[in-house]
Amino acid sequence: MDRLASGGDVEGGGSDDTTSARHYFSSAPSGRDQRESFEVEGVWGTLHMESASGVFASHGLDRGTEVLLDSLRRHPISTPADGSLVVDLGCGSGVLALVMARLWPACRVMAVDVNSRALEVCAANARRNGIVNVETRLPEETRAEPVARMWSNPPVRIGKEALHTLLDRWMPLLPSDGEARMVVGRHLGSDSLARWMDTRGWTVERLASARGFRVLRVSVPTQIQ
Image (cartoon, rainbow, N blue to C red):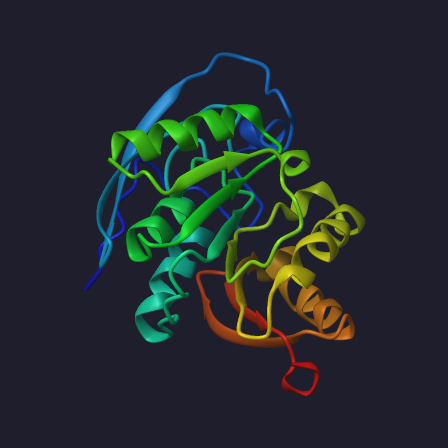
């Protein structure tokens, strides 16, 4: 069985400890840059990670991301074609980006976040683990291109309108064989988000529910493929 080891057990799904929650969706978080180390283990091997104050899940692996990764055992995801672009949207310290990079070494992995410190930490974590197929980008540095797989622990605390705008920017980039997986806290609106995505024309499946979170699989409806 995969083991997910963390330096702390922080609430995820767009939530974090109360101090970092004020800053993790800021472009340049203020305050001291304090680092904490943790490990993430699974079929992808062991990832030696570091997080930082002012970055989402600043004390280690958050529960929402843990639930998403744990769901991969019961609901595996197919490997994208070599050279495909896969995206970690709202990457934080880069756990999901690095897992994708390990699982799909022939793919190009893009870690996207508004937080410059998060991108710096993610890039450092990639180097720490000898991973070379991860690139970090601010949203304004990205361009519209097909995204074969997108994983996200989305920043729901930016507000519903801003979150919908974010997803309206990224979800249309999924091709007919593309897939997104998101983890969202039930008390933070996972079901209402699923209904909203359904109204936007996406097929939404609830893959897993654990520890107060839902994992959503989102794809292009068959009738418009």
